Length: 224
Image (cartoon, rainbow, N blue to C red; front, side, top):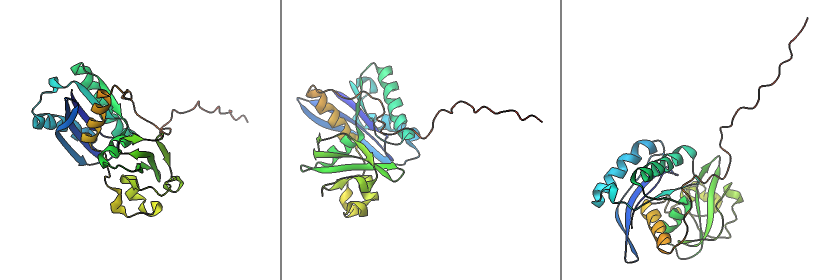
C-alpha cells in the first residue's frame, strides 16, 4: 500500500508519503511547516513536492489519509476538502485519522500521557493515552484547569501554551504538532490490522461561532 497523508487541523501543514512492505511501514518522503494562515496556499504545492521527493506519481497512490481534527474549522476544511477531491479524482479511498492520535504516535511514548492542542477560547482539545498508539478515552475540549491530568505529562501545543496550569516545563511539551509521517503510519498500521478508520469528516466538539439567523422579530406599527 502507498498512502498520502496530510493534516491541516493545527497551525502546522504536514504531508508525507508512506508505504507498507511485508507488514513493515516506512516513510518515503515528508515535509512540515507552521503557518496558521496559509493552509490553502501551501497544501497543494506541498503534495506535488512530497510526491516528487518520494519518486512516485499521484496515480501510484492506493490510499489517502487526512487528519480530521479536532481543530479550527478554516484550516481543517482545507485538508478534508483536498482529501475528498484528490481521492475522487484518483478513484482511491480516503480515510480519517484523529489529529491528536497522530500527535500521540509522533511522541513515541511507552508510558501513559495526555496530548493537548490549542482549541482557542482559552481551551484545549485533549485526550488520554496509554502509550503512543493507544488512546484510552474520547477526545474532549475543556479549559486547561479543568483537565484532570492525574499527574501525567502533557504534550502538544496546548501543553506548551498552558504549561503553568499543567505544572510542567514548557520544553516538556514536545512534539507540539502532529506529523504526517506519524499519521500515515497510524493509518497503514490500522489498515494492515483490519481495523476500521474514521470517515474523513471533521471532528467537531462544539458548535461553530457562525449560526443561521433566527426569524425576524415582528415590529408593531405605531399609530397616532
